[in-house]
Image (cartoon, rainbow, N blue to C red; front, side):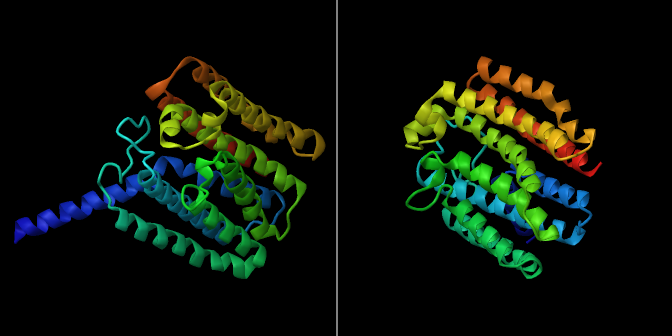
Length: 303
């Protein structure tokens, strides 16, 4: 009896750890930064409400996890996750979670995000309902459906639109009840640097994605284009603080993100000098750049 209980506890522990892996904790900063920056701009306007930011953050995290679950499921079903995969462990490919379990997980997580988001809809109106529904639909259709975005060169646009523009301006709108040019501008570096995480991921996986029929921009246009895209998004991100400083009367604190320039320079060098599994280090550092830039940007908006 005692051995059976111990075995059951071990099984539950393994399954719990498998779900944590499936949620890809290292990617969740991409869901946190837009809310932090949008909230910082609301603080700048003197209209910050902590409760709304917390709920927006939870919804953002749930949508990110739901998207990760969906990606794991449909990449597995489409054969995009092979034994030669260079990226982190995928739970379905490893046999840690079944297809049926993952489908239930996808429905549960997205349903939780929708129900929790209704609080924000009650506060801010139908605009937030539309943003929330579109975000969930985009999270599902990123790899699922008859025209999966990630398989047709639209993944980068999805990430920029929903993790950048929608996440940042949506958080700001919940509290201020308006969209503005400033909220749009602040969303650009957020989306650009989070998109760069995907760019590195796709750059690393060009050969595997090509074999699986996954037509990312990296597959369609090649490595030179992908490197240029990466650099362009970084330069765009670094242009925005200067625009806000010179044209929108922000204090010099808005230039704090420029402290991350050495990291950005190192990343560009890495993208031109390393290949294969080593690009996982580039991917990790790109995620750190996105987070550090985002937090410094938020600080600059508040100070």
